[in-house]
Image 1 (cartoon, rainbow over the protein chains, first blue to last red):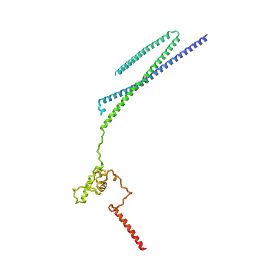
Image 2: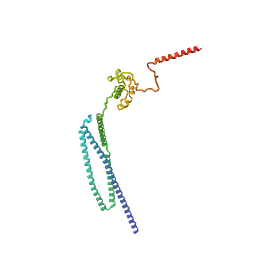
Image 3: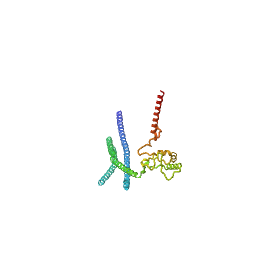
Image 4: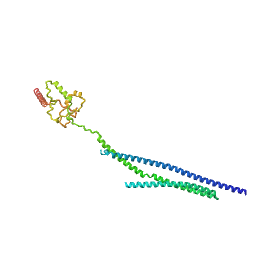
Length: 85
Length: 258
């Protein structure tokens, strides 16, 4: 009986250890996925930042060119003698 | 103008709506963080209070899996939408094209204005050009001619300045078109003109207009016989007559000898 009880105890311990390892595996999987998720978030942030920066640069250049054009048009309209010569 | 104003108002309204949505979603996320803490506490309590702890663990596992999947799905959706909205640069490209066109037009206008200004400023050479035949001979050569003539003929009176050249033409009697002056005007060659005075006088031949005699050089392979114009034919006639007399005299001699 003692031998059988010892065997059942060992089996129970083995089952518990296996369950514990399964839980650990699940937690590691979850943590790994969460880390991947955060990596994706960081990468996404970087790419979106770069894209938004390029867009901002384009808009800045467009604004500057528009301002320069406005100034040129203003000077041309202020001095009509330049075009009437 | 009115349409542009209405479109601007619509754009501002849509931007404000987007900002409000973003703020609302951020607030929901913060609320969800607190709910996540509540969910963790609930799971812990159920695990401690449950008789069958295996079931509680399985339930928490399933919940965590669903939560992670939902988060990943949500993040994917958000990132895709944001990427799509960023990559939509049609409006910017159109605006850039319009600005380029405006810049080109302004540059062309500026170039045209510069051209017109340059035509005003440019130096226009309106130097009067005279025909060379109406140019007078160099003054130095004429003066030297006069001085030489005075030296040769001291008896000549200086009050008659009529120049007679070698060929016997008087300068005043000839019409204007008979005179051509072939010498190029060289003002810095007075000494040279003094040395070659006779060659100049020979170059200043009276030639009719349109005849380019002086421009052509003398042909070195062709030479005329040096016979005077006055007695050329008479001489030939005399020579031929002389030769015929000698032949007749020879014939007479031959007849006498025979």
